[in-house]
Length: 167
Image (cartoon, rainbow, N blue to C red; front, side):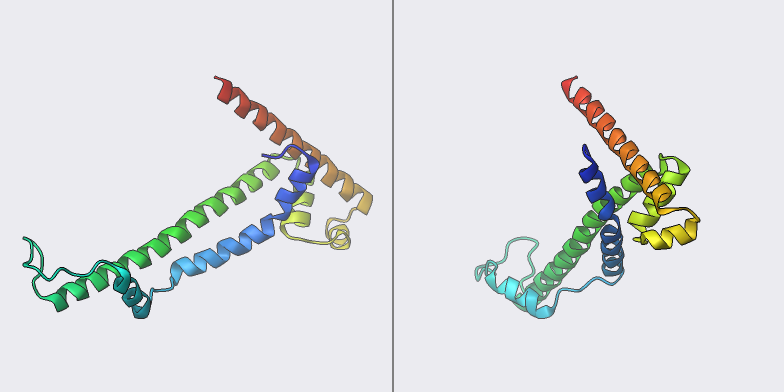
């Protein structure tokens, strides 16, 4: 979790990059790169050779057909593995985003608004001043109070988690 102000700031600053990574992974998930024939052939060339002896029960005796089946199975397996890796990474990133958004939502409305706009939307102080009709001093105070509140939440949750471990 986050114990210090620096931890909180570092975590908040990752939000835009996490969003970009999620968008990229969602695109790749919808348009997955398919393993090429050459990649599968190279992989199969390094695999165990098909035996020359009499075929065991359930095996296809036609070597060409067996090679084609091996080729298709390997292609499907590699393509499925790629999609699964993307899904796993998406789940991790979405979890981080949801956690950040949840914690910020627990703040006072004004603090949360400053935190969201400054860290999540990457707006500058002059932009915030103009948009929120507040002085920079007021905005910085709201941000600082929000960071302190987030730090307190993180410390509280760390204490709860330590308590769980002891039980």
